[in-house]
Length: 378
Length: 168
Image (cartoon, rainbow over all chains, first blue to last red; front, side, top):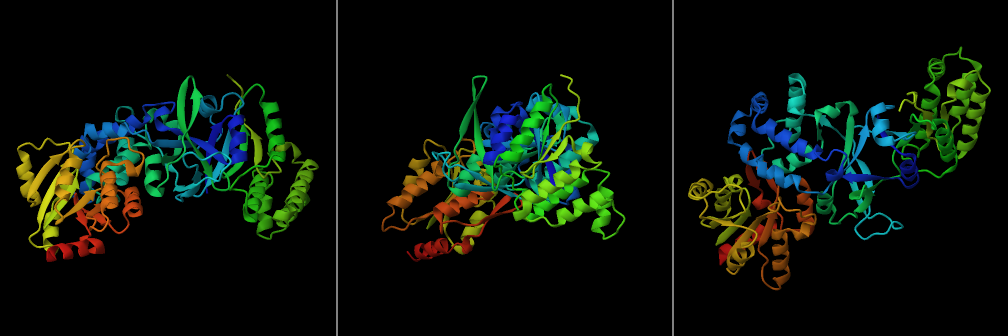
């Protein structure tokens, strides 16, 4: 499983957890509006000017095909500009790093939160969108499948030669295919535009971003339905967004409260919220998922995990407390959820491990509430 | 009989006219080149020879419909439309594309006449859109290097139309 992190405010978090939806922002209205332009122009430079492309085709033994392909015409400035003008692309960004100061300051504001989500790598997930003119109370009519894709940090002027070459080869593979046999002009222009969504200026490399992209034009072609577009106002700008619901909720396993002068009270309120509110998480639906989550919660503690492993391997010698946690965990079923969670909390409370779990709490919803360890410095 | 191909990248039609002549010997192939990026000028003749087609006509948004009407008035003409010719325009709704609009209109007008337009594309998501919209009037397209490869014989309605028209 791949763990990814979504930094946001507590207000947005409550909506994500209760409604299972995240707003995908229109690419033209991102914090850095040049993002998409960077992708379009960097790929054009790579394909039309760099000798890396010719060498790559050579390595695939496709020099003849490369020579015959009207690369300069396909990757022309005009085609690039035409693609830049299409405002039908929306994205949701995730970070591969937990508890990252730059993300806290940019996206979560003071005492914001970082949602941990678990995705299956290389697998498309199912999302639901509203059709144009549908009301909030109605069932979303547009199902779409999309997979997460890593961002390429790629700016020729800002990146060292070796890194440029490595990333360039990945982009060329995406563009022309593993065997360099996708050379049709129409498909190439389409892929150029699609891949550009995932190419960002190199200076942002520390974000380690993964992205989900939705193209309303593509969705209309695929489903015959036009998605509903919403608008949020930010500094007088009407920013278009797509309301994206993950089927059964986003796969959230933990909520971390970021640094802030009121971090303690925010943490307390989030524990209360997660203990009492009806929340949606597709990572906490089946019995197996719940058992895995409880095990991960307990074994996060380095004083517990070695003994737990021994118990799983049927070796004795474990501490009495860990043995009782393990035995209670083994009896877990969805119908006995409440009782098992209560018992586990009680065992921890009365044990020597109590202080270890002060800032790391398994709520009744199954989601772990935790606190950032970064000191409050801004 | 005549077969008209509407395409914005005529270079990728190398071999297509030959392919059409193989299954419909002696047919006339006309390429309507929609709003091309290249100013072919004197090179149009060179391209025509390269594509082995009979005629190349440059068309744009403003005269496409008129030109198509003129050609469509001859009942012995079949049409192959590239789906993605409006790529520069901000068209989020598939049915609003100029070629799709035209084809839908002709299909609605068809009544007892034979509807004579078929679509192809190599763009994945558009394949689903044309299949949904035009059903049996879709020709599977692939790529052979930088050239287009059309599975003309894999489209029964097109083969049938060819048979009917050849018999005329």
